[in-house]
Image (cartoon, rainbow, N blue to C red; front, side, top):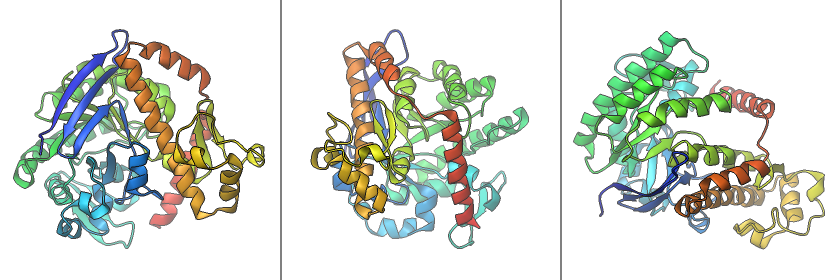
Length: 394
């Protein structure tokens, strides 16, 4: 199988946007790219065949969740995650660092790693940098991330520095462990530093100079205003090596892709497109709409004119509206397919605009038309999802 490589095919001189290709053992990834999230070896409600039809190139799964259920040793007995879930494309596995942050009431940190209670049954587990590399080797994913600490928002400078330095030491250990468990896997380093510009620049320099083949930017989109997130990237990107792919962890609304590409990011992942779809939120060029709204009740046309997704090609908006209002299972599939295809088509359009030298014009036109969810709506959503997560953990 071909080894990992990254090449840049075009760059935008007015911004940090670039188009490239990542080669992996399971096929190429053309960047910029959005990665649908299949936390538990499935992108909720859609099959691998439907992901391929939507032109997904790579998906993301989660080490923490797969370790708990069904277990990485069981997945290894099936030949790894690709065979287990019937997905023949590239897979990136997140380390569980986000869960270290989000499961704050269930875990304890020490220099060795993190000890936590399972959110499923309360059993005790320990994750160390070495153990994470062992689990990810059993999963057999193409790109793996090391254990890290995602600082809360807000936090003090002292807290941010401690988490960053701890993360750096864990990443050094992960580099050694990866070579022992599966030297053929590609390990990305994770840049942390919370919302402190100096720490962000320091982390980018340190991790960028370590022998990682790619860089993930962590600890963003954790409750901060979007302008603050973009500000951190403006500090980080100039410090990153040009010849390594850059992954913005857990960020993936449509406006995030358009802005993030201009700030030098190549890869994005987020549960947002699939999560909001399940609650009736569907993406269009004008912004997110609620398919449950009364205006769709008699709509004979598709959710959005010109959309090439399976849902819009085969079903009226009125039918999708009916399914959503009736909470029929088919809605979850059709709504999810629409949002995933929207994100993947947007990524492809961004790539084309970089290749043909029109990225700046594309960004301006898209953002002039697209109306993102307000900060008030985003905060209400975060609180709702946070409450649901805490209820599941109790």
